Length: 323
Image (tube, rainbow, N blue to C red; front, side, top):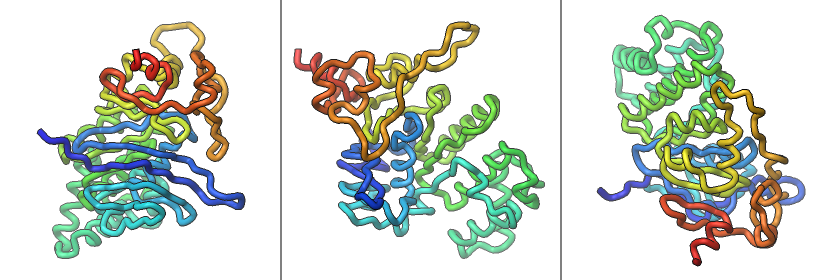
């Protein structure tokens, strides 16, 4: 079967204009997202994951600057310094925000908000059909009919998340970008929300771009892993293989930092902090924090290369590929 790509970027760069110029957050990004899979963007805060998600969603701010090319559902949405998300944003691609409060209007009931979204995208439906579709969406996210008449403040945190997911499904999109949808939830609700998204992705045949810094959640939900550091892809491959046997030192350290059941050992940490956009070091962007660093890492940035069953941006694997 031929590979069907829903999202494809070619040497994409995204930066934000400020008084002293442009701080490039994402540089030379080559990303491919296949139809009907869950692709996880993994990395610490400040690594460029949300900027990539906002670009796919068409939600970059007016002061964003771009180069390269981004294609979503066969439509060129970024071409050099030009952006055009007409007909894509909010219809083909929708975004589930990290904070459901930013997606839900506190002055309208959940039913009113769902009905408004349905009328907008399906103007020919009768009021009866609009209400039926809204109730169907609530059922899909495992919320009862009584939620239709409730206001957001009358819902628990987990219920708000599910209501926000229902709202995202209203236009019947092809792609959902979920930006940290499990943050600020307890362990049970994290996996409940992740399970719900995985279930909906399969039932609706959606493409899901799942953004997270929580590697344990990524391991649970994703089909494809894309590890991002300092605006670069440093490792990419199929899950669970990538998360069981990491190649790039950054992913290796992220996995070592996960708590282990019944262990009393001190948690491993990654020394230092991710570099700020516009202040990336020369050479490999991870070299100041890498335990395997050698001189070439400090001088030259490694290309991303094929290393077995995955892509890796690391001089160690480049050297091995030549032997």
